[in-house]
Image (cartoon, rainbow, N blue to C red; front, side, top):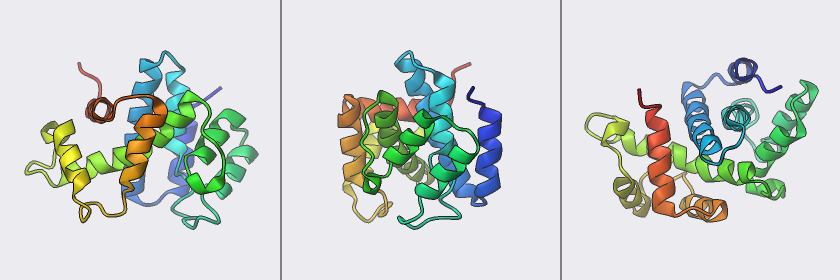
Length: 180
């Protein structure tokens, strides 16, 4: 049983950085939306998005992240499917991305952060001002959000089998939240 509340508590136990928590929530939103889009287990996909970097605050080095997190998740009884997806999001682990969920996590991780960065430079600092075209334009500016690997965004969409423009637009809508 995948429990979002337990995952949220685990994230908060290990993550003090507010920006990293916000990143986790953004990736969770994108993953939940893709889970729904692909008729998969939304809760499972959401928890994978929420927890993918939960150990990063305490263990930021490539020698430790996501390895330490994987150990902690195993100790706490999280299933292999979740642990494997999280391991696969970091290229340097050597864990291949085989499942659609693993591919979606990789595709959403860098993009969610980049979309947030684009929103923050808009006049109203709002996702309402962000569209796929503005994200693509900022992707060309190498000085903007320099740490975001553009090739991961491009390759992530390709691995997931979705058009890059559509992927960006889909994630923007996911980050805006459900329409009520």
